[in-house]
Length: 259
Image (cartoon, rainbow, N blue to C red; front, top):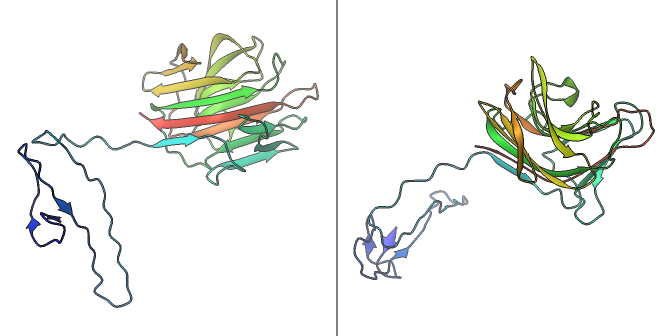
């Protein structure tokens, strides 16, 4: 309710100002409890104050699903589900800016995977995912990293996924995107060499394709074997080699949102 004085003696119904006069109004919020011992709460939500307009602008569209993770603090938030195979580990890094550190074991298929336990809030054809990460071994014969969005519960199924990956077919030692659906998977290779530095990876999904960029430089658009189901954030680091050297992944930022 609006009033013309601070003592709330004169109520102003349907208050609005359509002149240039500097009129002061007082907003009063109250709640009642009709039953003894019961407390009621009141909430003030979505109030807008305009100056110099006679008709308020139309309401903005609702904010769409949006997720941000900074990988900071003592441990992962509880909405992450972690799968560990073998002697692999996943912990918060004790280095400045190190984010979350995954270290694999040294037996084939030792891995750590993070996802949302099959809670899929993001669209397969109208969403974007951004992540800042680095791998810990450069020029390895075999690598297996996947960071992006996925429909499948488990990465090894290889279907319904979209994002930046390194795979065990890393013969060219460059970064590439991977898209997949039940019909198969498709790779989009880049000319950006795989190294051990942090980079910003982005994948944009639409009905016509998946466009990727590294450090804000567009690397191409994937149009084959696009995902077909709703998706969840997904991080996967796996050992698949015979050199006995554990694989590492540091990730310090991830963002996903529907467009």
